[in-house]
Image (cartoon, rainbow, N blue to C red):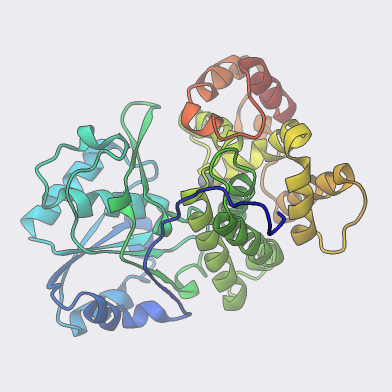
Length: 391
Ligand SMILES: [Zn+2]
């Protein structure tokens, strides 16, 4: 962009306080005291699997040492259904919670956001779905991710499962946390394939934010570029050498920067086509994105090749040649990451067949919130063709 060109108008929001430090959760009590001196009763929101790792013991001890009463809600499940959220809110009210800490993957952090807004509110969860529908404030909210992927610690979005395969989102500025803590010691136990899929999800957030049609802006671009640099240079190490704390911390930081980017410059067709794969076939979110990614990139290339070429220079330093050649280098690099980390690369490997493509295409077309951001218009026939190419 020439400096003499007037900048387009934009807005940008994010979480006000971020601590990125290996070992930081061991002093979470002091951090909470510093930021929320009035807090007395904390609720830690996590899932049963993470609770069993024992990694929640040190942060809970630290909170208690700081004088807080701590209760734990560990019934979060992937794609959390409404009743789980409502049960968590009931527990929080019973314990008179005045601070919520999400300590887990995207699902735990999404549930934590809703507890924080619902605990002292008489508003009904159902009336919060959609954009900007949360009324009133919330109790203090701290987010501590245990996977490097969703970026939920810095987004104002919470996704809830409302039916058998249907999901609704609450998107509201109150869902931005007060404090996010990135500590790689919480992620060292993640298996390689989970590390790969969640890491690729974070890369997709950065790629889609950088090429989003309506709200792309200089801050989201800067964050997306830095995110991709960190993620692409550390993802294979984090998968092959899971105890490498440096690579793990870089992945957490990259995922958070990508989260800050897509919270302001939203995702598009990769996510729109990934959601039905997750909803119908219960394929994890990161893997669903990875499966359709190269095919959506190829589809978008006529409209986005210039931007893809810019990103290729980050992922494949030294790449030269035409815009088309560099776009191909971006696709090749993402493909190489998927293959080196050993995750599935075809829909048929996760149980999807030709007969499912129409239903997938129908469901993808319902994701208008995402499709409207795509650099190229996606018709139903296009969506079906992309799924067919990914089969
Ligand atoms: Zn995602």
